Amino acid sequence: MHVDVPAKVQEIYAEVLRRNPGEEEFHQAVREVLESLAVVLGRHSEYAEMKTIERICEPERQIIFRVPWQDDSGEVQINRGFRVEFNSALGPYKGGLRFHPSVNLGIVKFLGFEQIFKNALTGMPIGGGKGGSDFDPKGRSDAEVMRFCQSFMTELYRHIGEYTDVPAGDIGVGAREIGYLFGQYKRITNRYESGVLTGKGLGWGGALVRTEATGYGAAFFAQAMMEAAGESFDGKRTVISGSGNVAVYGIEKVHQLGGRVVACSDSSGYVVDEQGIDVEVLKQVKEVERGRISDYADRVSGASFVVDGSVWDVPCDVAVPSATQNELDADAARTLAGNGCRYVVEGANMPTTPEAVAALREAGIAFAPGKAANAGGVATSALEMQQNASRDRWTFEHSEQRLEEIMRNIHRRCHETAEEYGSPGDLVLGANVAGFLEVAEAVHAHGLI
Image (cartoon, rainbow, N blue to C red):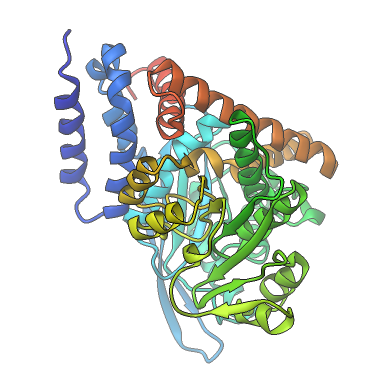
């Protein structure tokens, strides 16, 4: 059967738009993958005949539910909960929970869709899913967060399990929230099912390096990119946006690898510290006190806090967007290029707009997509699941070594696949095609389900 590939890709995308109106982030994620898959359909007509791409673009299950809870003043609050179980061809659904006011079905679907390919690239036996709520934990007391988490899990528990769906944390869901969620799951099910959630506390089934994994993994991926170009982190000025989990541990690992992170940010502005961000002070401000990034500048002499403009205005060799989706736009990309940036590595999920990616390519900047570069978090979640299944606990050194191996393997797969499919150096195409092929083969093996 002859396939008119460009027409087929357009037809698939048009149908995704028709079936999922108003879900812009999901549309963007699908379009980015489809642009890479034209070369696959050209070689594998069976994927067109069996409508493999269309099947992968349609979630296996979408769950939306009400989450009622009471705040400290006794007022009833109503939030909305989501879990999109997108694809289980390679293993149980796996992906984080995000608690943030911006959460809606389209954002959860975009994250879940990305997660399918990201998880496939790790080489671990995990499918793709994502969930969350429009609840905002910022400014809430521990008691309020606990009541919300207990209400959220009272519905979610019936949809998850270590062989079904294994959530983890994401924006707004850290060790505190995972603890409350796990406690409620245990209470309802009467099972100490450690493998049902990842990102757990170290004293009750958590894995060493899980906290650090996404940030460390992005740094390891950047290091592999540089090595492929005959370079290293030595002396490289780096800017990492955000100051959450990914940014904090990305900064820590970049410093260990010989780079110098001179700026990071939060929603109120950014700090510049030419000496290199002091990770211990940043952890105290963000992880212990849950403060603002300006508090860092107040404590570190020589550091300055900037309200206006963008963290991408700071000149650097390496940029690691690690805050949220679509934070780095085309203007920022051109600013980075003008200031001599040579590597952009996505620490967050889809933080670079399509226009910015095009501008980076035009400027000859090496670009690593999040589904490859930030896969360290979910890879280490899968390692946590392994340890839970065998009632085992690995050392920090062993876990970090496994993480580095996985990140280097992901880079190698993306690099080799890009070459094999005629686009050397295009890690976006390499990641999309390598991830898709792995999932597609499993989808076909399982029959038409």
